[in-house]
Length: 314
Image 1 (cartoon, rainbow, N blue to C red):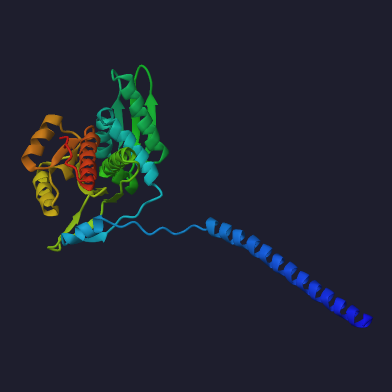
Image 2 (image 1 turned 90 degrees about the vertical axis):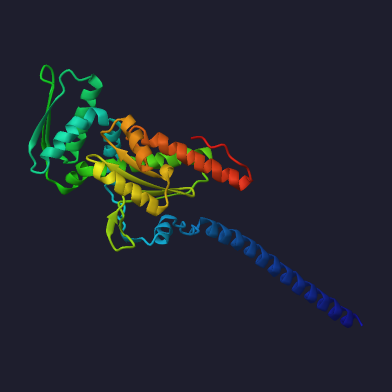
């Protein structure tokens, strides 16, 4: 009897030990799973989730007009340098226009130029010297020297470098305007808490429905609105009627088609605007005029979404 009791007791002890071992294994497995799960979650957090590519507005817009994009220029590593120089020139154009004209006339053969700064305001002197210094630093002028008082004379030698020729030939103007377009988008986006899409094409070569080739200066989409902007630094008379006709073909009204002129007074811009149903403006006025339109368009879009009727500021 005693032996039987001992056997039963030993059997119970063995069963209890097996259960303890099993429970310990389960706890260890659970702890390991809990440890692995946060590590996996942390790993997933660290991974960059690819965002869907932004939906293009401009290419479908052109396609809807029967227009195909033939060449779309790519971004260039030098764009930042060109943009900075373009902004400097555009914002000081009144002081630098004479110097720029001399460079453009001489650059075809790489001839030297001189620019007298005598009796010019100190700010103009500083602008001209700084501009030439920056051009010389990037080899857009082969030589540059400034003689101070009492001569106040810039001596420089132009270059036939293709990149320089392109810059002086009109690239600076297009890049200046593009930066103003981006500035307008940034201002209005900040006013609507960043919820404003943006896209642009600069100098795309396109094929019209009649198979003619054409090149746009700037086509931009700010929010739902599309803007076409052309720039002219020389004679504009033979272009304005053609641009007005093309704006109608694109379906863009007065507020959404621009022609920017460098050497035309404001009153003549107003006259051209009224005659050709485009917004004709200067370097000084392009940003403000575009800003007004984008703000109005954005307000109308927001009011339409809320079911309201906005007051339009014209």
